[in-house]
Image (tube, rainbow, N blue to C red):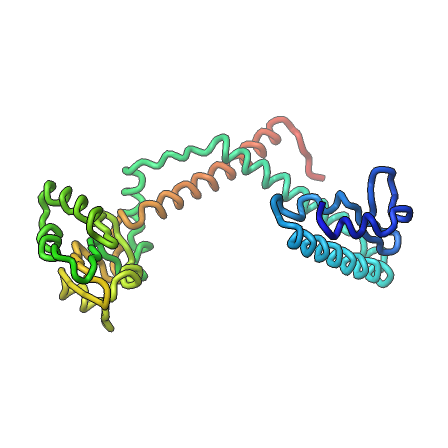
Length: 277
């Protein structure tokens, strides 16, 4: 049991019982904080020192909150203290939210075909302008005195499937780091975090460099750019497909919920389930 509870429980049990099996940890006027109120406050596996701090902070926060509540009760009118309408509205919102979520989980079709993705992309290209430069590239990071730099350069330039396989095998054996997936698009800014490329004009650099080689005090970096897209241009579909899928699913979700509301209303009208006076 956590230290703070031991302190409370051994400090004088005679005055700390409200129920026979429930120990009291704190009191503010007629409000009591019980041992069971700390359940869930302290994560399982927390050590004794951290448990003591969490328990102490929770008790202190509870006391301060109750003091403010009691002070407010003295100074507010009964009308100001009446939250019946707000609580009812909040409860209704929660009930509707939970029902809509359950409906979506049960009824939403989550399969988005490539045809749907392509159609949405073709119709809404103006919404897919690039905010950053993106690239398709491969790179290999080798120890500075690596004897097979020229071999890696040759393999990186090749499009033959046998050379691609050999490149992957050689990277696994000799490279300090590498990236060979040239089918996916990456933000050029993310590439620059991994490779010490110095450029003050990304657009000009990408237009004028297909292969680059850099080195620092420890490594040689071999880079081949397969393709690039400049910011403010149309983003390629392969870069946007996940985003488009989320857009399509969100629209389906909205339509599903809207249809549920309309169906309920029409059914209620048909069955004369409500009246307006």
